[in-house]
Image 1 (tube, rainbow, N blue to C red):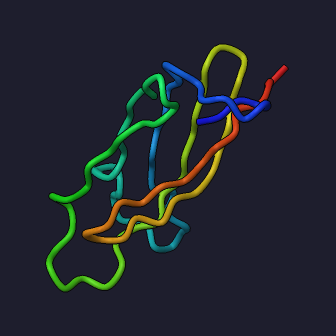
Image 2 (cartoon, rainbow, N blue to C red):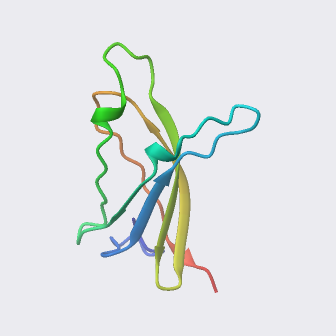
Length: 94
């Protein structure tokens, strides 16, 4: 998470969640995870227990990030057996 000047945001709340489109509406809530960023502006999530070996692709998840009056949103594609990263910029919601 970065602020508007490109600096890392420490202690920002970050949520990854699935937002399926009807009529495909199985329960994807098991993929929802929450964390806080460290001093480097990064939050870490581990989905290794959710995919099966040989599976092609895993998930595309929405990102919600907040700290004080700053908010940001994004999308991340989670690919199996890889480190996946996405940068979200937090801007004032006021």
